[in-house]
Structures are given as C-alpha cells and as structure tokens.
Length: 176
Image (tube, rainbow, N blue to C red):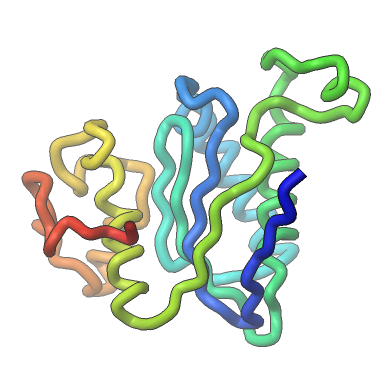
C-alpha cells in the first residue's frame, strides 16, 4: 500500500480535487443541495475559508484557506464525504469487504491536494477551478455553469464578468 505524504501547513491555502468512484456519474450535480448542506455542516464544525469551488457531475475542485494554526484538511474532507455518503440510500455496487467495513462506494478513497505556494500559483489555480466546466465541455462560457464560485468572485472584483466567455483566458495554463 502506498505511503501518502501530505504537506500540512497550519493556516495554509490548498487546492483540492475530489472524485466520485464512478467517473460516469452525475451524482454531485444531481445532489448539489445535499452536497452544499454537508459543506455548510462541516464549516460549522471545522471552519475554513472557501476561496473557490466548482462542482462538476463526477468531481469537484476547490481552494480552501485554513484558520491560523490549523492544518486539518483531512478531517474536513472526511466529514464532507462521510455526511454526503450517509445521507444517500445505498445504490452503488459494493464488494463483500466494503460491506463488512460498512464502507460506501461513492467516493474515490483519496483526494488530490496541492499546497498553494505563492500569488501566481493561487491565480493559476483560481483560474483552473473556474474554467473547469468549459474545459470539460459542459458549457461554452464560465458564466453559464451554476455550480461554481465564479459569480461570487466577479462580485468581489476578482474577475471581470466577461472573463473567458468563449473558452480562452490568460495563457490556458490553469493549475497544471
């Protein structure tokens, strides 16, 4: 079994990707209200700042800034994933081992995390988050995807409303 090393910076800013196990599923947008409720519950229990978030049918990307002195993003992901999974009826195929462990088969076991290094890295990842629905061909313009913090970012003056309307923004190197 791999030994995963997570970079933990108290009060740090992180980019995450969390995927459903079934990458053909549309569960995240089908159950967007439930997902939002689970995130709100986590925010109440273990606060953090949501810098950016986009929810796509089978995965999501987000940027969080943790409170000063706090590096427990794993606990937050555990709460979100667990609450979401437990709120749904069992519908997914599960192995005998998963059943014995009372595990669900909704999420991929882990998530991808990247510690934001500097302002340029932050901007690239913000762009990546908000441009992702266009990248995946879900909408022709960033403004058309409803499950994103893009409109909030526009209201805060971080982006012009017409940013990337036809599929192009800056140099296209978004967080990769």
